[in-house]
Amino acid sequence: MAGTNWEGMDSEVANKVRELSAAYLENAENIPTEITSWANQERQTWGGGYEGRTIHELIQNGADEILRWVEDPTKKSFKSGGIRVVLTSSALYCANEGHPLTPEGVSTLLSNNLSYKTGNEIGRFGVGFKAGLPVTDRPEIYSATGSLGFDRGRSHRAFSRISPGSLAKERVPVLRIADPIDPGEAFVDDDILTELADGGASPIVKLPFKPKVAGQPAMATG
Image (cartoon, rainbow, N blue to C red):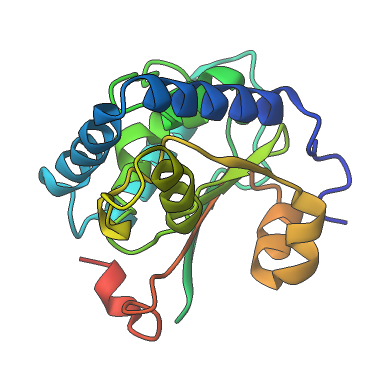
C-alpha cells in the first residue's frame, strides 16, 4: 500500500521545512523589502528562458538523476528506471525513482541561488521545479523521506501580515515558505499519486494547475 513506509510529519525533511519557513518569515519581518526582492527573483528565474518549459525541465531533471544513479555502483537497482509523466485537466505529475528528498534538498527548494546538481537528490529540481510556477500556485513534492507543499495563498496571507495592504497576491514569493504534507492523507485523496508511489516512484512532483490553466493541459506543455 502506498505510503506505508513513507515518513510523515515528524521526519527530518518536515522539520527542515518548518525551520527554514520560520527563518524566512523572521527575515522578512526584520527586512520587509526582502519580500519584493524574493518575488522578483522567482519571476526572473521562471521567466528567464524557462517559461513554457515546465514538462521539459522536470523530465530533464529526472533523466539526469537516473543517469547518475545508474553510474553509481553503490545504489540499489531500479524497479523500472523510467520517468512517468501524467497530465490531466487539473494537474501535472512527474515521477521517477531516485535519491529521496533530503534536508539539503529542502534548502535548495526554498532558495533561489543554491544548487546541488552534482548530487542525486531532489535539490536538482531547483530551477526545473521553479519552472512550474507559470502553471501552478500550489506545487508539491512527495518523497519517502518527507513531503512538502507550497501555496501562493498561504504565502500572501503570511507576508501580508508583515507588510499589510501593499502586496498583491500575484507579487508575493511562493517558494520561500512551505508546509510539510502527510503523504498518507494525500494518497487517500489522489489515485494517481497512489499509483505512482506503488510503482516505486520517489520523488513525485505534483503541480495542481491554476484555474486559468485547468481544463487546458496543452498550456502546460509550452
